[in-house]
Every structure is written in C-alpha cells, then in structure tokens.
Image (cartoon, protein in one colour):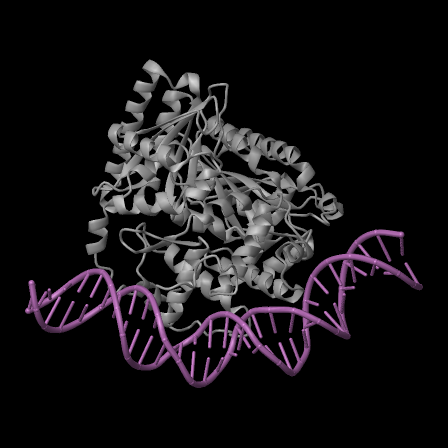
Length: 277
Length: 277
DNA sequence: AAAAAAATTTCCGTTTATCGGAAAACAAAG
DNA sequence: CTTTGTTTTCCGATAAACGGAAATTTTTTT
C-alpha cells in the first residue's frame, strides 16, 4: 500500500478524490499520534507542495485534524458524524444496539453486526461477552470479501442469484488468500440458504467457530448480518441449535423493526423531489 | 499572512476537497435510505456531469456506497474504519470504554466523551444510564463551539492561555447563538480552572445540568473531556460533590493510562524517520 | 548558543484534470 | 406506445492542480 510512486496507475479520471483518499488512508494507517507532512509525502510518493495543498484542504473541511501541540496530522473527527450517518443505513441503527446487547448477554460470547458494502462485508458494531476466552476476530471497520466468515457468508448466501454468481467469479483470488476455494464456498452457500443461517466451523481460524444470520429485505436480499463468534467447543450440539435459533429470531426481529426503510420497493417509489433547504 | 482565506466562500483554493466534502455532507444529511443523483445535484447546485463524475470517484474509493437495489447513494462504510482511526487519537480508545462504563454504572446518568477538534468539541462516545429521565443532548459526532456545554467548557478552560484568548475572541458570534456572552464565559472558565472540573447548571438547557472534567496532557493541555448530563435536581448538593469527585478521578485515571501517547513532548521527540515499507 | 540539517510553506510557469452545456442512452410513468 | 424524467457520455475551453525550486521556519547537532 505505501508504495513509492505506483500512484500513476490510471490517471484517467477522478484523480482528486483518489489523492485525498490516499492521504487519509495513510494517516489512518499510522499510529495514535499521527504523522508529519514529510511522512505523508514519503509514503504517498506525491510531491511536497501537492501534499501540503491537499492537507490544507482536508483540514479546512475537517477530514483531517492537526494536533495544535505537535503539528502532526490525524484523521479528522468529521468522520465520526459521517460514520453515524453511514450506520443509520437501512434504518437499522436504532434497533441494532439492543439486538447485539441481548445476544451478547444471552450467549456471553462476542457478537457482531456487519453490512454489505460492494464486494465486502464490513464490521460496523461489536459487543464483547464475558466468557473468559475472547475471540475478537473483527475490529470496527474491518472488511472481508463476501463469503469469508460467518456473518459475511450469510450475507453472500442471501444476495440475488446473478449477483452471487458474479461475486463468486470476481473474487476468487481474494478468497484464495483465506484458503476458500470456490467449490467449497458454493457448498457452504447452499447449506446456508437451506438452514437460514451460516455455520463456520474452524475453517477460517482453527479452534474458532462462527454463526451468522442475515437481515433480509422483503425481497429476500440480505443487507446486513448478525453473527456470533466463539471457540469451537462452545458452538456444538445442543448449544449450537439453541444459539442458531436465537440468532435467527433476533435477525428477523431486527429486520421487522426496520422493514419500512429496508424494503427496496417502497424506497424506490417514495418521492423526494423538491426538498428545499 | 495577508487576506485570502476568510469567508471568500468558494472559488479560492482546494476546490476539489470542498466539492467532495459538500457532496458527502449532503448525503449524510439525508435520511437512512440515501439520495438519487438528481437530489444531490439539486441540493448542491453543481452541474449534473460534475456530480456524476464526483460520485463515481467517491464510490470507487469507498467514501460513498450505492445501494445495489435502489441505486441510491449512501455514506460509504469506509468511514467506519477511518473513524476507528480517528478515535484512536491520543491512545485513549482502549481505555475510554471502561471509563464511560464505570461512570455510567455508578451514576445511572448519561455520560459523554468529547475530543477537541479545531475550535469545537466533538462528541465521540456516549453511554446511557438507566435513570428513567433521559438527557440525550449530544449524538455521536455532534460538535459545539468550545465552551458551550460541560465537557466543552472543561476542554476550553484547559487550553494554553494564548489559544484560549484567541478562541474567546474568534468565536464570540457562534457562541452568541447559545446565549453565552464572552464575559460570562470568562467567569466560568476561571471557575472551572479553579475547581478542576466544569459545572453547567441549566444555562444551556433549562432544567438540565452537566458536569465535565478534562483529560490532560502532562503539560496541562486538555485533549478530551468526560462529562455527565442529568436533570438539574440530580446534580446538586451532596451528590454533586460526590460525582464531581468521581468524574475527576476517572479523567485522571484515563489520562494516566494513555499518558505515554498523550504527552506532546514525547511525541515530538519520537523519531519517525525512515519508516520502511 | 550558534550552526547545520530537515521540514514546512510560498511562488509561479506549465500541464492537465475539471467544468458544464448538450445530446445520447436509459428508466419510469401515463 | 408516448411522454417525462433521470443517468451517462462527449467534448472544447478554462480554471485549478501540479511540481520544481526558493524562502521560511522548525528541529537537531555541534
């Protein structure tokens, strides 16, 4: 990622956003006390004056903050309010918290909420249970290819068929990194659709299992997923049945609460014209 | 140092970031199911083709997502990971959660964590106690001028003197919106510095009070603040003394835990040169 | 404390990505 | 099927970004 001057990949279009995003990524990938301009210059391969001008612009608009004491650059707190907006997507936000809380309390394990974003599943919330062996696989904002991980698999399994096919074909190489070949994944998808929830037993990280349930629109498309992660011995037999049941119910409840916003048809018909400021 | 940066509006510099930020703001300000391109065009006042190109770029880099079903534009989930980076600022993140949790459990009221960002205090986390009368004044990402609100006031009070003076002068008009004149604020600042915590008794929202304590660097500058909000009757007399004590202690603990990162001097001297890729 | 080295900020001629109007392609409504 | 509205592509003109280098400031070394 911080390659020297590979930036010129395709100069065709949208260069402005590309550069800005690159700079923010660089700063975000650095530690808790930020970077100096030189560090950004070095890692981005951009010219000094370009980086300077870019940072000035980013600061002016709150995307980047500069520590007044050290002059170092940090990711701006405007991201927080934008994230709040991003998470209100599909209207799940007001209810998701309570769902996670309930699941977490009932299972004592770690529970996650993920959204689909492009070809990825992104972890947007997490609640840590008090079972002593912690399984923190996903941090906030982490993303994985659709199909990799319990929540991610349940998202993939409930995409429209053409979309699913496209994703299976497109992302083969990325998935290979995780040791998932396409044939195996297809089998898991069928299994998941069949049962209505996904089970990931130690394939991704040995000794750890995951359970995922999709949050569905009325047309059957998944937009999000709830999942539980635990050491494998805690997701077997009786308990597995129990938890998968609970998880599915919770996912359905959640989908139901937000269904007015979730439903794509409704949204499409809803008119937004002539909104004045 | 001459002119050329003030309220000239647009047209000056860095127009690229300005436009991108504007578009994201517009989408963020819309409801949970996003906007169509036309809506963005209308609200931004930009040309159709410009918006189109801009959105394409923003999507390519994950700043904006497009719902595959409805084709509407939503704030991208990349913001989530950027926000995670933004909140790791000063190294407080790993400890802040526990602090909020403890305060919330002990008081049953609503507790907040805020950071300073430019001339504002921004709410970055919140925990809601179970006292039946809720006082949810700040949402995640909300920002207010420094000095307005308990946490914000404690942040302002513990800025270096020259900075404080500059802020008092610069932001007078913005603060006026909240009914805070400069003289009154100066008095409150003195009081806050004196006691080591801020008390906001119903001036901002009548019937509601707040209590704030700064999280200080070793040089005495505040970078963040913990605060408690409750109906005024719950922040008086005996209980006020108790809670302010607890709040200050928690703020100090938090600062202590993160002190290695917090301390500006240390950061400045720490060499980052030649970071290899 | 002065000198040296590094880093930041400003300047300015050149280049090129952006702009925006208009029309083509597409989708929805009547 | 027609009409209306929305998204996408095209293209020449121009304003905005680029980047080398100099001026300034900050940091490190002596």
